[in-house]
Image (cartoon, rainbow, N blue to C red; front, side, top):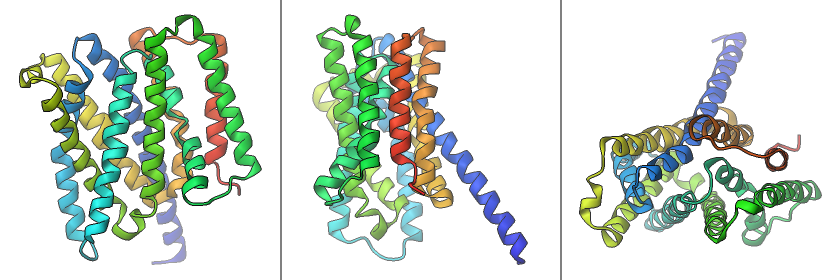
Length: 304
């Protein structure tokens, strides 16, 4: 293969990587809107979460089988337990808090809050890994949280105790997911991203299904065709597709460039919520949302 052919192949690989990263972000951004639509049909958070994870589970079992065949070596018991525990943190606790929060918080506003998770990654990296934040990163944090303050302050009149509690749950979801990323960063290089994701997701799926049977009667799973369709969309388009697309994008363009495209997520969710659910933002909330996106975007932008 000539040098020119290698360059062209590399460019095509990067282009595919960017397209996959955008696909993953846009697919994931549909999830909060669909969750809110599910609630409008009368389904509860535990049932919708169990349906989502139950429909997702077969895909992740296939992912695990495929990753296992391609693995260079066996999985150490310690890594298996650590990955399973991180799956409970990042995809059970974080998902459950997010689902609960979206019962009272509008989908667009919820994504703006959840998008703060990179700021928690920075803080946890400083505490857990001893990585001292730079002045540029502290400035980005200040911009992002100033934006969040504007968003919440502009909506203060509509924030009763229930909605404030929902916003707190979504912040807790962002913190749990950030912890999953920080501690997972030490495990992924040893076992591979695909095997890590498959184990984490399978563990979370089983936990969400078990949680349903503890908290709800089995006949709650007898939902309408519309609710089942919503759950299937959340499972396949809002969960499996973005997990796969993001994993493939990371191989082609790296985490730094892929993370920059994450700012499309809240914007896409806000537009979908506006078009499909008549959700809107005031002028101050738009400014605040842009500050959050800008602050987090600069935080994830490589210094170079």
